[in-house]
Length: 439
Image (cartoon, rainbow, N blue to C red; front, side, top):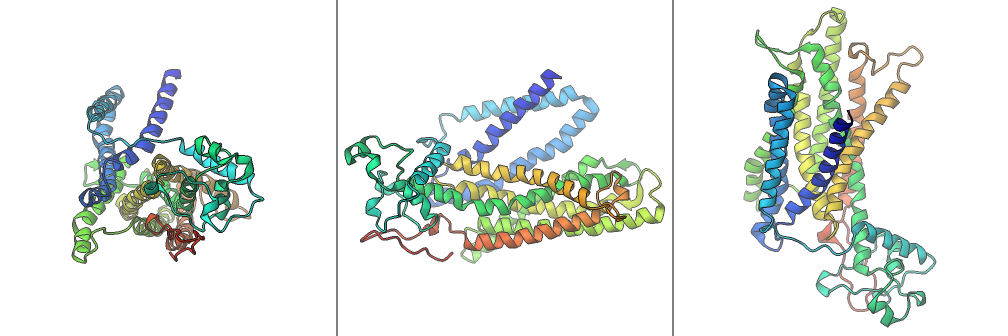
């Protein structure tokens, strides 16, 4: 068991390293100043998601067959061989990859800006940029914005920072930050409202791999007179719907955008919005199907191994959530990596992956709250130990309602989000702070 748990933890560490780095590294292979490469970069995230889902499809089909019919050691062996091959394939491109030199530690930079601004909290922000410290090359400088003006204090030069010669040679980063570094921290903080409003989607997604599978166990899964569909195979419909929706978008919808002279297609925020909408449809459909299943339970008394209702009634909710995942995943990943400041792309990718983690934790909290507050004063508990004794349809309805509220909040945040292209007006002349442009 010690060896087994060690393997699980090693796998978790490996996944953490790969997931947070592979997408920003892949995106950095494209030169956004080149029109053709910029277009390829926009396609990269959709195809990245497509390839991931092909791997998932192989896992629930080919690998599942190997595990069940040949042996688990062969299944783990296939995974090991595949990862070994992937490692050598990745390493073979070492000399051809484009590398971007990383300057400094982004986490340290965030802490330094916060500490420097806090130390100068009693100092009033100047009205002119001339009193703020900057040493970045002209082409890499970011213009000052009126957001989070408190952080601008980190760039104020005071007597405690030393003389100008000392500052120009080796400034103390815990007391003095450049305007560009301050603006990079501002840009990263600007992603947080979008981050917070995309967590709920992954709470919805978690229901498909938990309660929807429990529904399938109690229903008739026969396909014809002989074949019995495995419960785990229902995930195929989730994966296929995601793959097909992106293929249709890439080959059909994008073509319509080209004809309308909008080659960029849907924006990342629009993709996320579409994903959130389909997630709501998925929960509403799941609630209706569960209500129908419970009617069959009451009519039959829940007697027998499976209810006389086809498990394929569950397909719409799997399909809707699969479509939602395709748009949300690709939109989120592209958004957080693209909109993150230079040198913080891995943090942007990490923000994306933390939304799924927080969404899973959100499911645990939501289930605990529902179990605590339902079943009191003689009312029926929603999430009973036996699914036939509960009201899972009410729970799905609650999740759908919370998702609707969350989508409204997302739309407000998306409308007010100011991206890299609208970062604010460049300060000229007397270098006075400019008023922010409307979103």
